Amino acid sequence: MLEKFLASAFCGLIKTLTGARPNWRGTVPAPQPRVYFANHRSHGDFLIIWALLPPALRAKTHPVAGADYWLKGKFRRYLIERVFRGVLINRNVKRGDDPIGAMLAPLDAGDSLIVFPEGTRNQGDGLLPFKPGIRHLAEKRPQTEFVPVWIENLGRAMPKGGLLLVPLLCSVTLGEPITLKPDEKRTDFIARCRNALLALEPDEQ
Image (cartoon, rainbow, N blue to C red):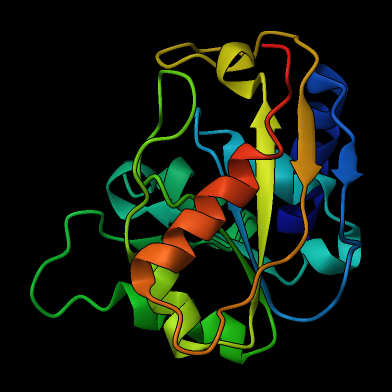
C-alpha cells in the first residue's frame, strides 16, 4: 500500500539525515500499551520517535498532534490520518471536545501514544511547564507505562519556519517507565515525569 511505502520512506529519510539511533536506557522495547512523552522542539519530534521504534511497535503507536496544524491542507491531513495514524486533538479545547477520551481509545485497543506534555514547541532550553493531560491519562489508566524520551538536536536540524531538514547528528534517549503511584497527587506525578525527562538530557549542550 502507498501508506506503508510512505511511512517506510519517511522513517528511512529521517534516520539517514539525523543519524539517530534509539538509546534504551532503563527500558527495552515492549509490546504493551505505553505513553512515550518527550520534549518538544519541532514538528518532526514525533516522527523521529516513531521512526526509531521497532516496526512491530511502530505499527501500534500513534502520535498525538494538534488538529489546527495537521488539518491545514489535504496533504497534511493525508499524512497524519493515513500514514502516521495520529490522534488529532484541538489544543484550544472547546465545549464538547474530549481529548482525553480520544487518547484513551488507542490505549484501550492495546496501542501506544507519543505525546508532548509541554503542549507547544519550546524554542529555549530545558522544559516548559507541563500541561495536565499527562496526569489525566495516568489517572484514567493507572497501569499504563509512561516512558520519558529526550530528543536532542532535532530543533536545530528542523528549525521553526525552515523548509528543509538540516543534516545534524541527533539523539533519542528512552528512559525508565513511570506508573502512577496509589494516591499520588497530580503535582507530584507531573514533577516526577519532568524530572525523569530532564534526567535524560545530555550534560553537554
